[in-house]
Length: 167
Ligand code: ZN
Image (spheres, rainbow, N blue to C red):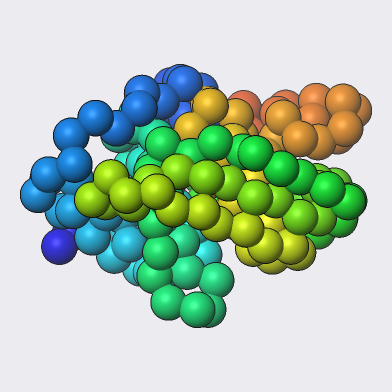
């Protein structure tokens, strides 16, 4: 297993619609293990493949009930509304109050290609919607209200310009 660097805001892979997983082989198992290790090291409760630069439709998670993963997910049901101070490993150390559905249900497959379903409300529902967004190239910033998003983007751009400046 290996810990990978987590891609951060400004990296094009985070704005890319990921491709479905087609090979259910050892490489996929290894990718899942690496993603889990990277997530735990961060630490985080969810990590999508694009966040380590792999534009494939899968994510891993652990919301305190042990490690899990979901491949080629579809968001099949949402209901309710819940506001939560949400963060993202790809936009480190920042949190915004974001309203999303309170409950979410996703269907997909596991690492062997067998059908798998994940559902939950509050933190689990939030994580599922957040990670699913990553697979469509959507960051949490896009879930902010227009004025807030503008301000957040302005700050982040300023920071990333600062980081890009040569020493
Ligand atoms: Zn994220």
